[in-house]
Image 1 (tube, each protein chain N blue to C red):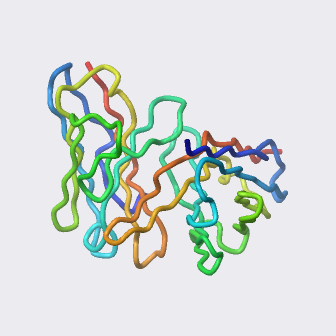
Image 2: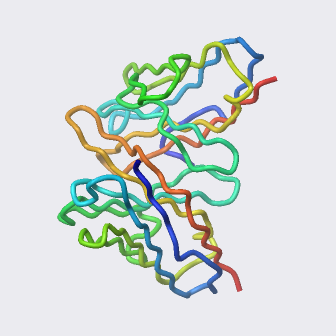
Image 3: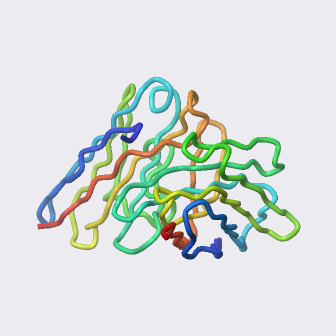
Length: 121
Length: 110
């Protein structure tokens, strides 16, 4: 059974930093790309970053480019998101999600339960 | 403002058929496949439809998807109370180099 478990969320002041982790199990982590997707309170889903299985491709949404860094450790089956220069508008539940890229079918299929990040003074 | 456009709400009575639309552009839906997600209150999104019209294992055949040009739609037939949720369309955008989502449609079962 695929499991994704996020951790590291919490309350942080504006301008501060936080590092999120996602522990993966139930599949061969090193063969899948991964994403971070967030959801502000009462709002819709917003993709923020993707990293390929080998780390050769990394993409960011403009809203976080230059402030957030995605990384992974395939030996530890873990995905990370380093968040710097946090703003109030970064307040959201952050989900890690598995990425599948097959011919003519790309999808984000499994999602973790999410971790809440609150940016407030 | 979401890249993909969905109606904010939809509703139906038990047993009815409802459809939810999703409009995009040539850089996303026009070029790539569409996925749909169901998010029940207080839970993570769940993949409902992928590759425009494919259902993952375990998803009832009451749920169906279609795509034409730069638009897609999700249909739910035989509406049930447990279908009350938020529904999101999504696709890869070649210009933005990232996943784009619709703003979500809140389905109410009357």
